[in-house]
Image (tube, rainbow over all chains, first blue to last red; front, top):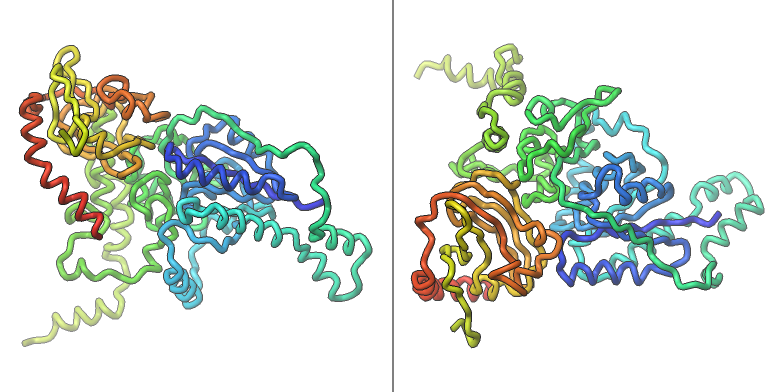
Length: 361
Length: 145
């Protein structure tokens, strides 16, 4: 069976003609490509759980390229939450705000990184072998960039690497040879004579607002379930964190993502890239020492710490819902207690400071 | 006059300093929309989004939404404190009414609260004269960046 790749274009919420044009040109350019099916959907994030959009996506079992106006992490984990799962496909394209230089730096830090001993939720997931590639439509203006990347991915997937490996110890079986040659032969006529059309999914996608968990970062620490007082989070049968009631979430409130120790909670439509799912991880960036020199906490309003901003945002939502504000109580102190608890063994720095106290000037 | 085009400001309503009109509804609530000056600067509006749900109490100058247009991207702020009663839902799907009928179907939201800071049409025109310099500097400053 020839390899098929489905390209899904998730439309922008905006009516911006430039954005619509980019979407249309990608679709038009890929129609009629051998082995490529094209589907057009409203904004991925707004699709309703039982709606025709997600139903259509669930029906795609092979490899998929998702083109959306979202960070790739956001797109991938929105799909995952809806049981549309697969291995992360690697793209050569950047996402919004990512530069060549940053990428090099990131690779460097990745290679220098000491092995992370934290167990992530993704480590326990059994993901199907099919690949899901997420392209960020905000990153390039030229539709050809996306079309070429789709074609590159299609070629990459069509290369039967598994069969080739088995040749090493012998000669290819005739059917393997046939399959290998068929995959790349360019001059076969298209299978149908009617002009190809994209699958258009029309869903009345009213705007939604809810958190998306990046399970490759999440350690299942459950800080979020403790913190959110609106019952958004729950745990599944395997006692793993789950966005159980997404529509309980308070529109505009990103507070839980600020308390997440692993930056795993994404609000794809938030203005701050780190909350909207940019690839930045606090840990891989250089440490900003401005705070040491008196600057207010970056990424927070005024001099508030992230946890204080989160508590304030949560209070605002509690009051709006006719409930009482609780400040920084509830959810947050647990972690701080372990950080500052007196039962922590002293380290070298503590000992050094203690010895300073003992000095008699 | 704004540039080479005459701008119309209906006199049956009040205006806010952030270039919104405010038409009185029942009680102390007003319906707000973009005044000609704002629409002229924005040009075609492509996208409108609100950060808060209807029924929310808001503070003066609180950030309440985002707008994207042919010429600009901007955050939107509350013209005064109060309770935001309702948003124009039609604009979320298709914001073009902001351009085609800014003083009618292109209304943005309805807000209830203390409105002492709203300006009469005459006061608003004076305000426009006063901020014109600032606006020009804002636009030109960003173009030179």
